[in-house]
Each structure stands twice: as C-alpha cells, then as structure tokens.
Length: 314
Image (tube, rainbow, N blue to C red):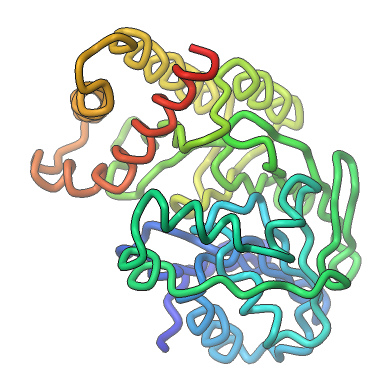
C-alpha cells in the first residue's frame, strides 16, 4: 500500500486514509522526541496506509505510544483494533461512551450493516477488529498525555456525537477536531478562505449542545484545526461563526420538512441546494457536477442525522 500524506508544521503529518475517495478522510501522525501518536485511524481498510506512512517516514512501529480517537464513527475509528495489532507499545485512548464499542464492536457492525448493507460494509469498511480491554484507556475532560514531553489535552466535545473528544495541542495551538469543527474540503477553498459546514451524522446530533461546544473550544484561541474531513485549516472566530450559521441553516431545513411526504428525500434535496448556494456565495468556481460529486458523500448521512434529530428533539 502506498503512503499518501501531507507534511504539516510542528511535526504533524496529515495522512489520506484513501477511504471512499482522495482527500476525504484524514488520520494524523504526531512526532516528538522520537515518540509518535496517531489521532484517528480511518477504517479497517486504511490500516495498510497508516503503516506504510510509518515506513516511509522511517518511524518504527515500536515508537508509537498512542492511538487517540476523537470518536468511534467508523471513518474515524474503524481501523483502531486492527492498527493496535501492529503497534506493540501503543494503547487506544477514547471517550468513556465509546470504549465498550471498541472492545466489542458487534453493535457497531450490526448498525452499519443494518443501514448500508453487508456489501457496503465489506467493500468500503472491510472489517471491525475487537481491541483487548486492557489496551483501551478512557479519557475525560481535562486529561492529558505526554508525547515525548509534548502535552496533548483532551476536551469533551458533544454535539456531533456524545462520545466525541477533541485534542488540544499547545505546541501548534491547534485542535484535532474530528468532526466537531466541521467539514471543509480543499477543493472549495477560494480567496474568501475555507468553506465549512457541519456533518449532522446520526444518531446524536444536538445543535444547541454543538454550538456551546464550539464556543467552548474558541475560548482556547486556536490558530488551526486539524479536520478529519479534510486536512489542516486556519480556524478563528469567523470560522466558528460560519460553522454555527450553517448548523442553524441545516436545522431550519430539517424543521421546514418535518411533516413533508418522503421527508428524507426532501431534506436531502434542500441540503444540496443549500450547499450549492453557499459554495456560489463563497466564490467556488468548480462546475456544479463536480460540486455535487464532492458533496454526495455527506448528503445522505447529514439528511439521516437531521431526520433522527427531528424524531427525537426537533
């Protein structure tokens, strides 16, 4: 497997896990004083890419101390159990709400297959390997890890999911944000900067809690966010304002279609119109066919998440 990665500042590497398409799902590798850590892993099929990255950068598997998971959605954590088998000195660090699903992933597997089918699971996710209980460590708000003297701090960040953590790296003044600070694809960058929108994935989307979480993170005064979808972006108060605006925009779409016939289809179509509109206002020059193709991977799960939220709280 070929390693595909972007070297960033502060000894951080953004790895393209090659899930679904190019530049869609990232994992991160941090190095410090001869020690290394992965933040998120991609899915089971991404593990050869992560190991190839270590080899390409001449980092021994024995020097990796930590596999840190922002949350347990399978595009972020599906490869954790398999990766752990290849890293003899590493443990997995995860939110307390997610730990048991890593030790026994049967419910995760059944849930994904129930929604997407066995063929999708095998083709795009591969497998789920249980992690030994003694190698899964729970982390909570304010906990820290030292990576060769570099302090990584855990922050409890619900809103996208109740089992979500972000990791604050003082060295870079950056937040490894999983999905909490949104989705932003480099193809949509313009002179206006980055275009950011929320992944309202089922089943724990909570807009009010999410907005509180964003404001909590901004109190750290970050300079950058390391997004899973995709790569490093500058993140400031204007970024936070954009993300909150679009969380509210997505919620308004969901509420408008609460009683619509074929509600899911109606929400999905309205989301696409919304995304195309904000891309145009952002100065995106890509043709509409290309934009639709890039947004396609998010539309289905965002619409599903909004539907679940409507049924629970909306």
